[in-house]
Amino acid sequence: MKLTRRTAYIFITIVLTIAVDQISKVMVRMYVEKGSSTPIIGDFFQLMNVENEGAFLGMGSELNDTLKLILLLILPVIVLGLVLRHIIKDKTLDNWSLFAFSSIIGGGIANVYDRFAYSSVTDFLYIHITDTIRTGIFNLADLSVTTGMIILVVMMLKKKKETN
Image (cartoon, rainbow, N blue to C red; front, top):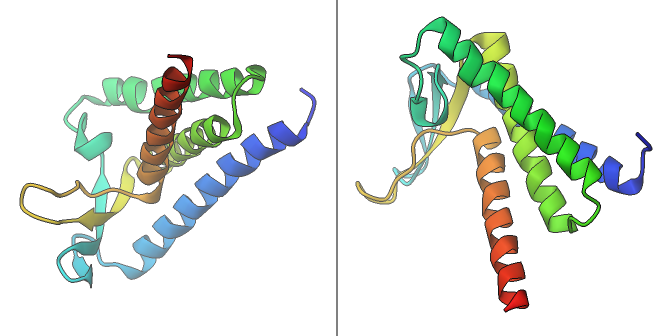
């Protein structure tokens, strides 16, 4: 694989996404007591320290160890590898799509690393606007994945609108 400016952009985005996520989790593990809740902006935005043994919003935490290994470690690594291969090979992707896919890959790798290293993922951010409008507890890797997905949807809609 030839290291082009485009490939460097992909890998720098992935590495920065992983680094920011992992640094934030180290800080939370060091300075925020497990199970605690600290208001940052009133009850609207809170800092917590929760170990999530499942996937998104704890889904899959009740699975047996073999299924957890397959669904939360092996399968994500395969999918992330295939997506990485795709974005490196597909030269038609615009910079926003490259950024989005790279953010998804970086966030995915960061959370898979946690599952491998700690058998759980450290989640620590919580937004509570009303009892109906609120998030689950999440981390910066989750935010990267979600942001990447939103960018991809927006880019897809934009392309669809341009072709109509």
